[in-house]
Length: 246
Length: 308
Image (cartoon, rainbow over the protein chains, first blue to last red):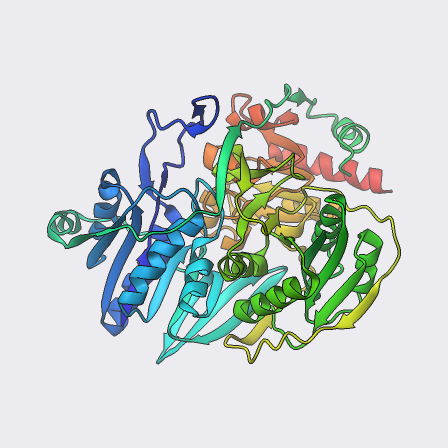
């Protein structure tokens, strides 16, 4: 079973978010990049579990620059067999998707996994775009994934409940919380990652469809109004009359 | 200029569906709804601005390829230059496919109407906003829930059958489980949430009672889901669910930055915590410093009195 896991870097979850150049660029000063948690904790770990159960190969792919290789090594340390970096500095989700689609077309994968979104742009775009480019079925935000022969059984949290879906391989799936549990790389994994193959592929020619022109921070919250713990009637009254939410 | 709005027939009566039709109406021009799966609630979308609904009852919302074919066919039939989705489970699978199929820009997570050619979107898990421009003639906008108030201004509209020729589904729905009586968290307008400050899962009774009194959904912080006090689907925060309710009441949650990322789109935040220095108070609108075991029962009583 040949599995491709799409990984992206994202700013560490504790990063202070700020912008530079007249609010047109994300301020990377002091920002630590990590493997996007949805890609790492759920998609990659589930791919490794499937390989452990059924045999096969797990390749990770990222679209980024040489500086992103630290993030790739981390994913290799967790257990991926090999890595591909498409050498590009993508500007939108479509550009990323075209790179991955082209690579996947030239190499046969039974299953392509991604995280449900990245922590920075939250677009939830790339997985479905790759599926469309490859003309494959796509299931978004699967919280459980099991393989029976050539059929995937998946769970999705839908409004008010859970739905169980079945789809045949090959397919593209995005992973949400619940699909797997985070794995911490051990020393042997970290050492092994240094010598695992990391292939750099030149970028495929493409266009972009969208552009970010600027950013802004949410307006500062006005001071929190403190309520006496013995006067919950006042809180209810404020929620009704002032905030108008109940 | 026509605007097409995709509606999942199963959710035709949901507030999020009314929001996307209202949003489309406010763009100006004719608004046409294209729906997968039939529903008696579809005609009522005319009230929010749709001039007609095109429905293909044979398309399954679980099959993103079928839905994409349906919407693409409707774009062709109507000449629409803007397509609006609600940024939900089905649309997250369909809108990007449609973007590739039509070679049209996809603007995900919009929170407001366009200002000129710029569309404001949610980025960095709600910690900031970005302004995006579409570089293609046709644009697809996926709107976050609770970004616009539905406005009922018209009357019910015609619902027409529309054969998309989308073929057979590749994805099969095997089962659906809906627990009785629970308000789904992603759609909830009011949410009561609790964290480690509650000391143990046996103390959640009062959280559920407060939620019931308010007709709210329940949620929790990550540590509480990780140690198994509460189910994973209740975890809100950076790596769990991001929600945008009108009211978020946080009980015994300190307010780590990862938790705030999942809730800072809430309109009003109430924080109840014993620690006056808890960082959550900085993000709150109303704060109560006190022991949850004393404050929450009083709040339940006050809510019940208010509801009469």
